[in-house]
Length: 316
Image 1: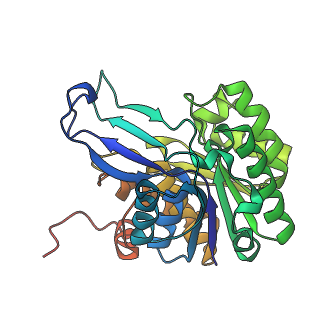
Image 2: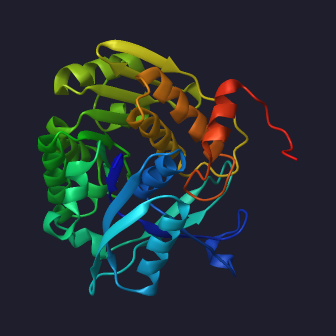
Image 3: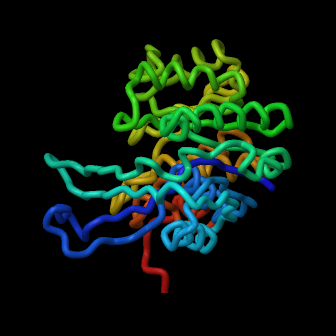
C-alpha cells in the first residue's frame, strides 16, 4: 500500500450557482473530506491508497464509501450503530459576499473512533500515512486517536504527513497550536498554508524562513508551505525549493489544497524528488480548480500536459 489516510468525510450539499441556501429548492449531493480527498486524488494519479474512518451504518454512510470507491480509493471503515453522518452546506459566491460553509457535523460517528476499531495494519504496511489538523479538532477522542496513529506509523517506519489545514469554525488558533505541536514529533512531512503558519503556529518571516524555522525546531524531514496564487515552496534537507502556481480558470476552489497534497504525495510515493512532487502538486491543484466538487478527478496525462505547458483546447 502506497498511502493510507485517516479522517472524517462529510456529505456536501450545495445549491446551484450562487443561490442562497434559504431560497434553494434543490441541493447538489457529494462526498467531501480532506483526508479522503487526498486519498482519491493520489489514487487517480496511480498510487495505491486507502482511507480509514468510522461511519454510521446507514444509507448516508454507504453513500460515502460508494462514492470514494468509485472515485479512486479503498474505504476501510468501522461501521457504527450510533452517531450520525456529518454534512456541510456550501454557498458559492463571489466578492463581496464570498463563499460560505455551514457545518452540521455534531455527534458524527467518526468523533468516537479509536485505534482498536480501525484497520491499523494498513498503516503499518503503508509507505505513507496522512491526516490533517481537521481531525484532532473534532473531539478529544479523535485528538488522542490521531496522536496514537501517528506514533504507530512512526514506529512502523511509515513516513507520516500532516497538513495543518486550520478551520476557524472548529477551534481557535491557540488551542490548535497546542494540540498540533504535541503531534509534530511523530510527523515527517508537514504541510501548512503560509497564513496558517503565521496565524496558528505563530511563525514570522517569509515562507522560506517559516519552513526553515519549523524544520529546525521540530525535525521535520520536509516542510511544504503553500502560498495560494504565489505557489508553494518546500524545505527539505536544508534546501529550499520553490514552485509557482499554474494559471487556472476557477470553477470551484474548494479542495484545491487537498489536490496539491494528493499530487505531491502521489509523486513522492513513486520515487519523485521534492521539486518534482511540488510540480505535480501544483499541476493537480490547478486542474482541481476547473471542476466542481472537492476532489480532483484528474488523470496522469492531464497533469503531465499541465507540466509540459500544453494549453487548454477542445479534445476532439
